[in-house]
Every structure is written in structure tokens, then in C-alpha cells.
Image (tube, rainbow, N blue to C red; front, side, top):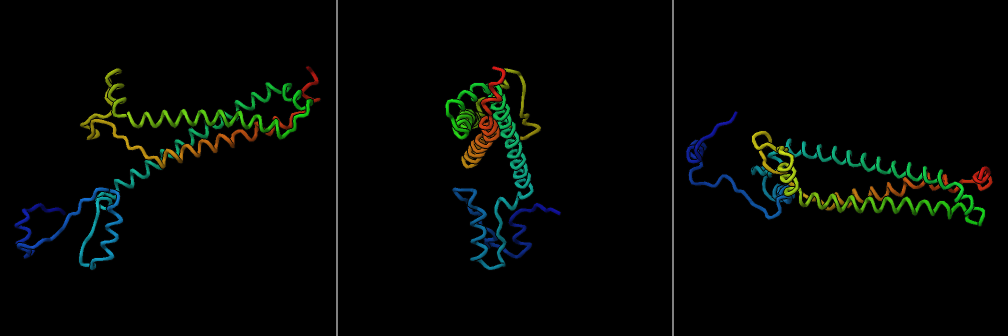
Length: 213
């Protein structure tokens, strides 16, 4: 149950007239509140009740963390699909360039050099795509508060109704560690995606590839 009373009446009820019953601390860095809370609990006696804003809204922040985890998984799936596209593109390229690969082999190119050619090509595709996606995503995140209203005016729609979501604009908080993590994962997957097509190209037999040429 919840009771709302005047502070003077509450002080009289608990016989605390003229006494300080609580202190609120405001920090420049709001995310340092949990660490400060732990420090105060170790310093002060157990008679003091200490809490911070993360504990007062713990269910809300758990929901936000769950949503963030789900979004990260969705992004990984999107990156995996893009990596599969690199695989399919290189496999088709290997099939199309079988005769050229065979000619290089007859001229003395080793399987390792053939494999290196296709790995470099696939890696360049992945690097260009990763850089363009990262730059585009960062620019979108930094300007989302301008882009979303422009889209709403252009198409006469309202994405965030203030009477439903209690906010009138879409906030954006760019986290550079997350950007770095996604960029590294995308780059690694683009390299891994080149291994099978490059290995398949290195296994091309010149006599078999040039039989019908």
C-alpha cells in the first residue's frame, strides 16, 4: 500500500521533527551511481538504507537490456546473411573463372596463390561493405532526431504518438564500444566467408577445367 502525506505530518508521526531523514546525491555521471552505492554500503552501517536509480526501476532496465540483447542477435543474423552473400558471389565467380584459374595453374601458379587471390577479393568486398555500413549507421544514429521528423512530414505519418509512447521524438545514444564490436565481427565474418570459395578455387584441376575449351 502507498500513503501520501505532508512531510511535516510524517515527521510528527515518526517523531522526527527537525531531523534530516534522507540525503539525495546528484552525480555528474549518472552511470556511476551503482558503484557509489556499493561504496556507501561498505562505509556506512546497515542501519542506513541506500539505493540508486537503477534499483528503483530495475524491471524497466532489465527489459531494456533484454531488448538490447535481442537487437544484437538480430544484427548478427543480418551480418551472417551478408557473409553468406559473399560466399555465394565468390562461388559463382570461381565457377565462371575456372578456365582462367586453369590457365594460371598451367603457367605455374600454386594452389596457395590462387586461394590468396580469391581471399583478397572477398576480403575487399567485406571491408568496403563494413566501412560503408559503419559510416552510414553512425551518421544515421547521430542525425536520427532530424531524419525521423523529416520522414514523418514527407509521408504524413507519426511513428511515436506522444499520447501512446509518452515521448514525441526518437532518442539516440551512440555507443562506440558497440560500433567497434559489430565492425570487428563483420570484418571477421567477411574473412571467414572467403575460405570455402578460395579453397574450392585452389582445388581446380587445369586438365579438367580446360577439357572442353
